[in-house]
Length: 594
Image 1 (cartoon, helix red, strand yellow):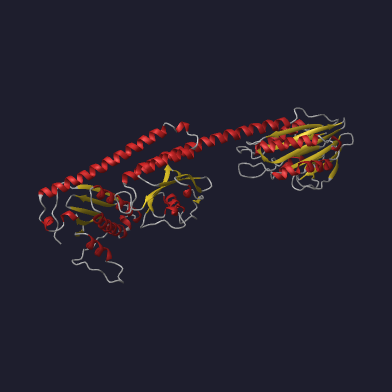
Image 2: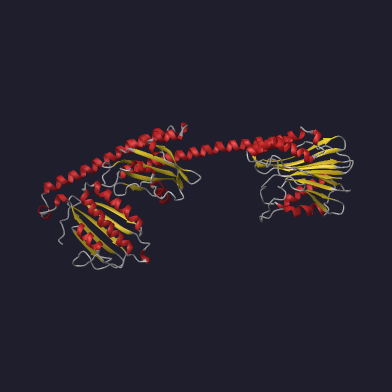
């Protein structure tokens, strides 16, 4: 095939693509934009597109593993007379046949060569050592025929060259105008970002300006939530405000999910129409793109922008040209920054509220604790309460009944924060409101459960509690329990007795039955009431302190025989066990000796 004449000063374009088929579309789009910018007609560009994709696919498909790290070099040259495409590959190469014919329908090869030969006016494959070059040339329509073969008249050549350059300059002016409008809008909204009150309203204003600048008809901006869903923040019309999409990939028909998971822009048009199950299908006859939006490595959401079919940029199957696509990307990134700023502000406010709640709960919890424990003849009391990072519902109390008696109370409200602390305060109030029942722990627990069941069950909470009436004169304990940890009692011989009367936690059932257990106090006794924060304490190896360690500590004869000394010793034992480990629950206990 004879070569067409060579025109001077062609426009040049180079593109290096990784040796991976997924990069071919991007390369073809880049060359298409280059040719479109130099006034090439659609039919010629379509032929170049198809031949280019076939050539790139072959260059990648037949590259050996040793050459996969080397990029495929793509070059394009364009002048008023012709277009030349060059693809440099690193395959073993082959000899281009002297005559290329359509292969047999059952043949698995040869169609690509026939396609390139049919689409282009000149094709040559140059084999070399280590690399090969595929050269393809296409005459531009204005220069086909005898006039083109002779080189054409100089006047006609110059006229077309001036026309081409006018198109390029006009395209540049359009892009500059678009950039100016974009920058103007960005600066205008940037000046307002400190005053943004409603993020959705801000997004609507910003994206309305965007569709005006790029000549689009509609938009949808979705943001990613922590639960893995994409939800609509702003849409140009109510019909586009669809239900959340699942980022797990279950929304397989959604281009927005495809763009998010692939981390690249996805185009749609009459050649790749929207699926009926796609939330964007209300714009079924549109063409446009869906762009994933990132700020650094943080995925923020997706922006879908479209316009009616039959309008758009220079490419037949794309709604926007390269400049408009850049404008869309700029607006999307700017809005994404505002979304992150808003989320950061909301998180700060939320943290401040939580910190205030913890402070309030801590104040409530501290107000429940006795500043000084009452005294009982022949007996000594000591108490300890250490809170975890978040305040819980642990508390203890001692209600004196005459000179010889007292009701010991220890309780743990399920949950943390203000609500748990408030229920602890209510429990303390209810217990103190029935002094006639202090000598009957089971009856008092029944009364408390009747009074608090409705409120506790209404918020799915419960309370474990242990009430112990101490008769110092008779040296006797009456123990009642609402699903709480067993009372531990040790005597002189070191034997530890576990006392755990039957009873469900408060708030579980409206008619729970509680029973009392009566225990005699031996001489030189040690009595321990505690919450589960002691036995569930974890060390650095993930081991629990456990009930057995607690029993062993109480029974082996602690160094001190005073309640205050034992309190200090047990607190130190727990602290040593939890060295380098954060407290995972409140630790509260009451110790009595005598």
